[in-house]
Image 1 (tube, one colour):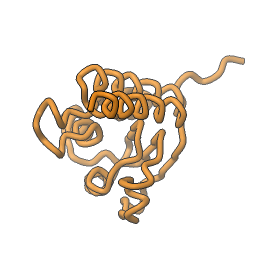
Image 2: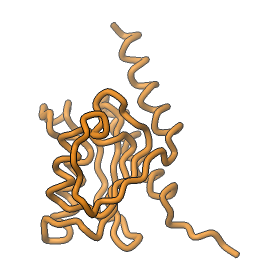
Image 3: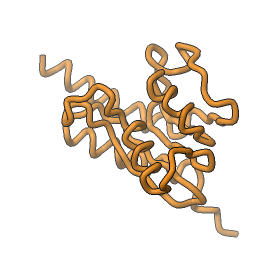
Length: 150
């Protein structure tokens, strides 16, 4: 019997591809994809340096692209896959999108929404730790290189 190809690992790997694009642009390597009915409708990565915009996190870029694709601001039937636990800004934005599910890779013990007890939409489901090692590895590599340059 063939394994179902579209699972959390599959889509997190797509988010990791976005994180790689951010890494190549010297952005903090966080990537995100938004999926509806096993179809990726938005791909994004951090653009805070490129756009000189502190709000240009991967999730924020993905929310905008997904809403654009769907022609509406509510993403209640969608799943956000993101390589790093969303910060409170992104979690707050996810509340307003009414995103159906958030799946993240690496936890962010200092800046993640869980640390701040940020309220998500009551219907939003959360799954954590998907491909956590891979998600953490690219972040660690980025910050080690940054420290070694200074």
